[in-house]
Amino acid sequence: MVASLFFLDISRVLRFLKHHCVQHHPCFLLYTCYNYSSDILKKRKAGDPMSLLSCASGTSIWRGYDYYKEQKVTAYDCLTDSQYMGIVRGSEGALYTTTIDLLYPRRSKCNCPHADGRRIICKHMIALFFTIYPDEAEQFYNDAIKAEEDAEEYENEVYEKVVKRIMHMKKAELQQTLLDLLLTGPEWQYDRFVRSEELW
Image (tube, rainbow, N blue to C red; front, side, top):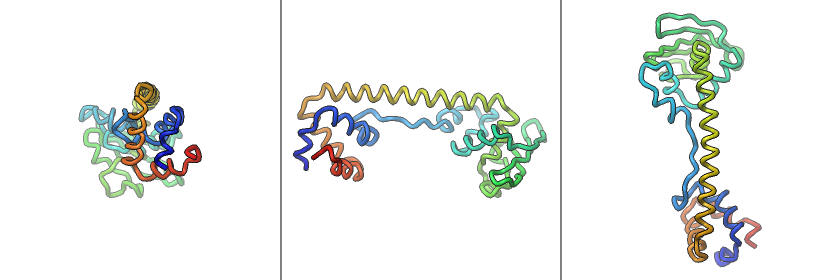
């Protein structure tokens, strides 16, 4: 089987690297997964209203944004300069009482099954926040779209660099690199390569 690796043409090598190896081996530049919550929101200053988002998971933020767009916040009221209480309709129609504290986000509360009695930021809190601050919702969405576009552009740049690097490798170096990727990468990668019909 190993001997058959040496007869692969360069196009097959490139396809293999793109789909099986590039993301899993330090020999090549890595693709990155952009996490809006950790990479942007956590850079906000403490006390900024957006710090509520920095305490939430990416899933909660996106689900909360969806709830905001679907207008699931049925009512809300301002308790203090930094505290708000609202009623948010859940996915199955249940109404949840949600309180957010912008100065101390971990003091925010919601009686939904996910957040009740826990110091976490749920999607209902995020929906309430975006309803109160629609400009922040718009900013979040625009930043997320821009991040996705940047990630896609970066991925294309990485692939072009990988191709350029491979094209300048000598045959022996290319063969050894491919073997290293197969033998040191995850087991599923090796098994998939072995099962590939293009090998035989």
